[in-house]
Structures are given as structure tokens and as C-alpha cells.
Image 1 (tube, rainbow, N blue to C red):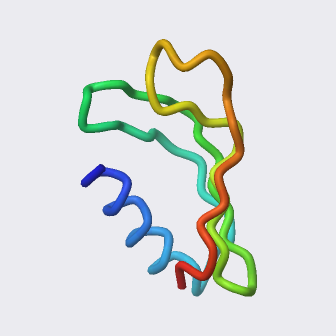
Image 2 (cartoon, rainbow, N blue to C red; image 1 turned 30 degrees about the vertical axis):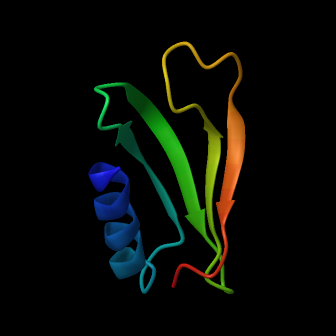
Amino acid sequence: MKKLIVLLNLLFCLSLSATEYIGTLQMASGYTLKNVRVCLDEQGNLTLYHVKFARMMPMRVDVVLPTVA
């Protein structure tokens, strides 16, 4: 969870110059997902595309965090 917060803060700082980030998402449990696509739109909505949060999670989802910025 701490890694996700750091990622969100980084994206907030990058929002001035970029709207899309592709990188690694690492969960506190040790699960790592590479090539995660994250977009920040003009309204401040942060979207994580095609992610899962555990190795045994049966499907990937798109997650929208409204008004992050």
C-alpha cells in the first residue's frame, strides 16, 4: 500500500508534464506487476489499467481513483 501511495505522489508531480505513466506496481504482500499503465486526466482522475492486486486474483480490472490531483 505504501508503494501505491508513493506511485500516486509521483504521478501527481508528473501531471504537470505528462498524463501517462508505465511502470511497476509492487504490493506490500510482495506481489509485483510490471508494465502497469496509469493515466491522470484533466479532472484529476487517476486510472490504473488492466491490474490485479494478488497473484491468485482471477481477473484484471481497471481501477479509477477520482479527483486525486
